[in-house]
Amino acid sequence: SLDVTEDGTSYAENAAKKARAYAQAGQCLALADDSGIEVDALHGGPGVRTRRFAGPDASDHQNNAKLLRELDGLSPSERGARYVCVLVLAVPDQAAPGGLRLLTRRGTSRGRIAEELWIDCLVPSLIDDSLATPGRHVMTCFIQYLPYALSGSEWSLERERLEAQLIRQIARFVPAVG
Image (tube, rainbow, N blue to C red; front, side):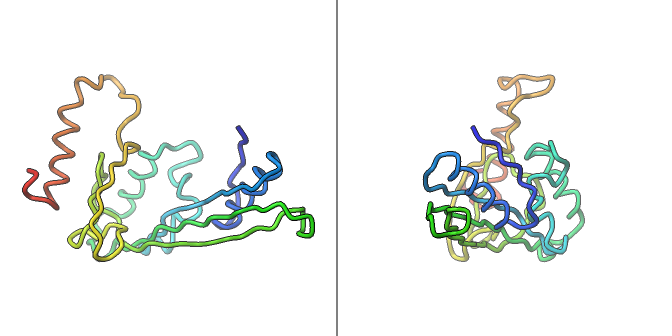
């Protein structure tokens, strides 16, 4: 496994660095990405530092918790944000600088940051525009928000509580579930 440090000042710089490294190591095409959340109230932050927002070794949970603390007290209309993703394809090409031609694409999705940490499920819809395409109904489960290792407890003891919290969150947008 190749470990590429993401120390660039832009998504494109980080994605290009990774694509180059993988293409050179494997002598092949390589596709890499970099992405992040840009929050209006944080003047575009955390941006390219999204993965390291709460510190260099912070977990997803710690990064998300810090983001919610930073936005505490703001109304939904003040929580505007966009998700940004840049993809870079490195194509071996002897005529290109460094022997690689880089093709870059950038995509964004607007929405807002939720007021609480979603434990397990995000239901973007016409009611909740949390980074959803307008008019789309999507249900996605994010396992990353569940604790991977419980501290001082066991999954068997926490399962009911986590399930109840998930049902409450879904019921906010699909009342028949509750």
